[in-house]
Image 1: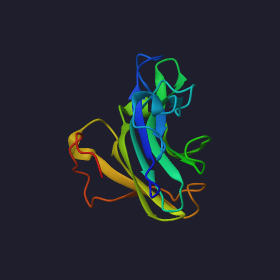
Image 2: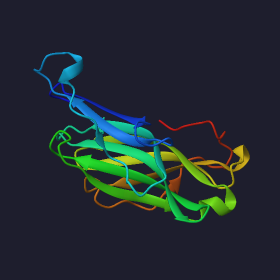
Image 3: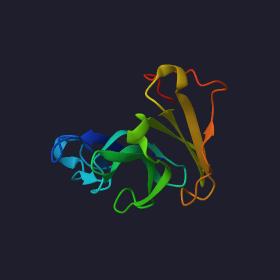
Amino acid sequence: DMAGNLYAVWTDFRADDDGQIYFSRWLSGTTWADGAWSAAVRLSDADADWGTDPDIKASPDGSIYAAWVERVPTGPATYDFQVVVARSSDQGDTWSTVVVHRLTSASASNAFYQGPSLGVMFPGRIAVAWLHSPDSQAATASILTAASYDRGAHWSLPRRVNTVANVDVDSLPA
């Protein structure tokens, strides 16, 4: 961030074979050493099957934003995908989390979300883009984006960025 603090998010498999999202920070002015990083804090929902593909950005106003994808169980062998954004205004001590968009009944069509990428346009205005595959076929994938004008409390409906649905499933937005 602008004060020289470093923030990290990652998919961690320590307590879950499928992975969950964790956060840690190093504060400027402390010793640069392994033990100087804060204890890892889990950000993803404990009720989700897994969390993956995290991204993190610091805003000029000092807020930290993290985004990731979660797979949420909805019944036996059924699930939804959701893009999640979390915000911290106290260098990661506490977080508020909002589901930007939920892809319901994803298991029925093999649909999924992948690779969210955050953008901080200026304090209070942020955006997230991600890959949406409605049927796990490369020829039908799209890049979706949503925006928030109130520090991530509310989100616009997703809009497709690409004009035709022809993005390779391995392509991730940035």
